[in-house]
Length: 311
Length: 301
Image (tube, rainbow over all chains, first blue to last red; front, side, top):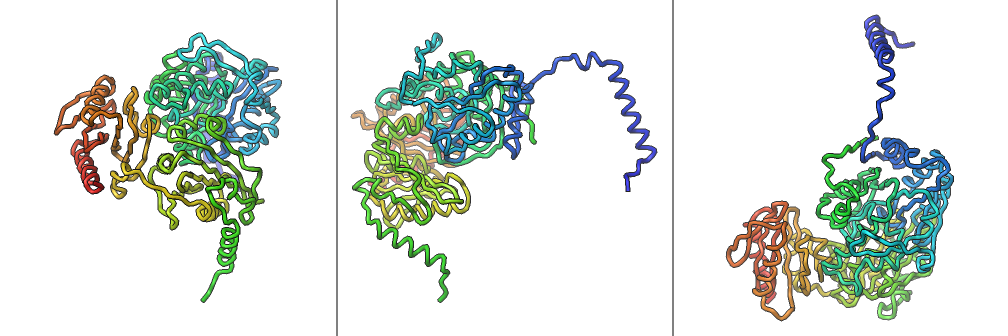
């Protein structure tokens, strides 16, 4: 038996529809021409990490805002170790590939110097290939795969050795997992870019003889910030679904599961948001402060538009 | 008497396995890594990284191992069809104190003692074991009940195969285990920075320990630089006064009381040959903790 519509509800519904029609009729141009204001950072939480990723990018205006038709997309994910919470989720990666392809990308390529074994062990190789992405790995010991790039604004890093393959692409999407890091206390978008620099060059970020005095610790953070001045991702999508908050970056460690995906273009703001997920303060993370000092983004989130959606 | 057949079977297997290996860690960890552990099969040959190459294995995670004194690591993965994977990493550190340091850092002092004198720390999906120079980390990579059970079995097996003297440094015992939730031994600035970002210049300590509770952190700093403790204390306070994050310094009972940027109360004093620093909410609590540490020093003497 169908639902009985009472006279009163019919009138009420009709009145609402009528009013809407008038409004649409009276002001159609105003409604449709006003520019949509997108958030600076989009945060989506929920148990389906694929959907979270889709929604996070959609909230920013959609992937076609960043990926042009026919463009070649390079993606930097983190397959460092298969320990729980130590690598980018394959679901996040799959969602990004699908969005890029739907936006018309001619290719979506994951570039890395971490061995294929790491990609296999984390399930990322399978996810990339199944979703139509390409995985290109270079030998981490072979310096000819890297190109010297001056770092004019670098305070301690004057030259980087960036993976040549990056320059074959039109844009970069940075897809780190945020987590604890015993060297920096925190890792997110900025630290992930070390994955594009040669391991030999990265080694210079850490002072010789493995000195771990204050100067060396600051040297590492400054080097990371300096590297970020020469590489600007078009978009950063951070996996904060499940990650380690102790014994990072390798783990195993205590797991936190905020089930969040965070997207945006201001990497300092995103890192500032992410570190607070486990009680850290951006001003206490030297790397974030150094990035802010370079003018790479905002540390103070109070004036930013942050969209938080729970699915 | 009733025996559960499953338990009897596993026990027999364990006994056969352990006695069959008859290994000795003094040879090499590779020699005691079995090809199979019950239904768990070694996937590939163990990977070995020595000295600086640790950077290639764990990248930026290498620094803290190097601060404590790292020699080599053996890494291997086992797989049980249809169940999942378990990884075993054996870190060979410079000496038992180095190994204890990284073990205390990773376990935050929540360890238990094994029958054979090893220390171990069981977590939900992984376990850390300390045996002499060795830190062994067994991890359930594909986390499920079967792999977690596997991790527990692996621990028993590796504990039988690897044992060693694991002396706890005196300085960490100055924090009474019953009064602190976490106890960490550190040997440099990086270890300390991960506990509390005390100072932005070089500290120059030989080693130190931290006792941590929900609302407070206490540090014991040890200097072996030939200077007397009062001289080291004065230098440290002078350095802290330069930092813009500390304020309201007041001398009190031979120590110094001040605040950090987050308005934590800090109380620093000297006890015997150590500098003791309390960071928390109440000055009185800091004094009580200093008194407890003083009592422990007297007991150990």
